[in-house]
Amino acid sequence: MFLRYKEWVERELAQAVPKPPGSQMYSVLRYHLGWADCHGQPAKEPVSQGKALRPTLCLFACQALGGDPQRAGPAAAALELIHNFSLLHDDIQDRDVERRHQATAWSVWGEPKALVAGNAMQAVGDLALLAGARRQVPAGTTLRVSDMLTESYLEMIEGQCLDLDFESRTTISTDEYLHMIACKTGALIRCSLEVGATLGGGDPAATQGFARFGRCLGRVFQIRDDFLGIWGDPAATGKAVGNDIRRRKKSFPVVFGLEHATGPAREELLRVYRQDQLSEADVDQVLAALEGVGAAQMSQQLTQDNADQALRELEGVCLPGWARAEAEQLVDFLARRQF
Image 1 (cartoon, rainbow, N blue to C red):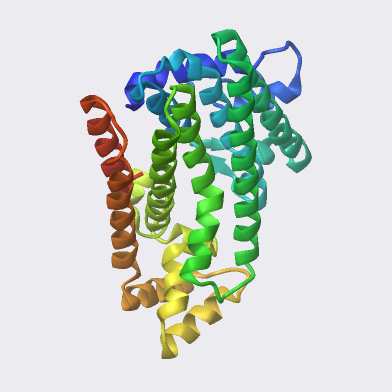
Image 2: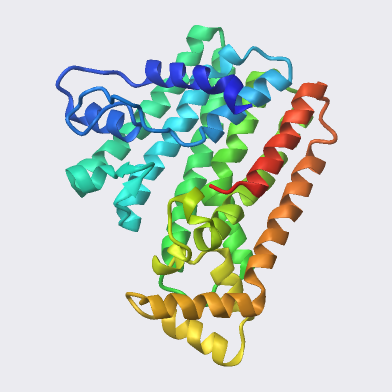
């Protein structure tokens, strides 16, 4: 699936992001996207753009329902640009100094310029969607898709606000966590499939089936991400074991640990997460507490449960054999990925 749409995604993004000479704002965008270095010169070896999951899902849903993925190209680009606007802002909020193996935009240009660049990336994404009119997408359909996209990234922003609120709390329920990731991660993934299905001419039942599939995929993606952030293989993730603990992130394993640990283990978790900075000894204490409550096993089980549910949501959608097989492969990849 990723290989089929990779060139399409890159082409649509290149058309969506202009290259005005001398514009520092667009230089920051192109740097963040991996196309240029910090001096605005074309990158000798473009940095990996990540998985391009959202535009890939959009194009896939369109083609799986018999539509022409060319019609969905502008929407696919818009989805990836909106995702990247959130990453520019997230890097500032999380104080991350590296993304995709290069320095983050704010660490190069400072917070104000990176913040403005994120705002610009959002606007460029909104404009990219309107290019669908040049692909014979009816105006009414374009408006409907635009509404879907805007609603979904408002949910995404709400999820980020909830995530920031979690940083100062030690009493977070699993249900609260699942609601947060449904907004922060799941909304745009769900929207990608919903938009693709709409542009593919899917009937309301098929579109809603893809939307439910996307909600489950969002949970699979984020819970697996949380697992890798603590127990991932450093050779694959490029990050040390326990990386998210050092950053004091309230990822699913930590939320589960705080919710289920008792006695001295719970007191130790509370002590650690009330600190501003963690030592390596603190990280070891958290790892021991999470092991004691089976947080790793529960993370893997919850990921698999949602992977199974995702495929059940597609059972009622009429799909060609190739599309159903690739959906199954995608779910398996997201549930078991090592990076």
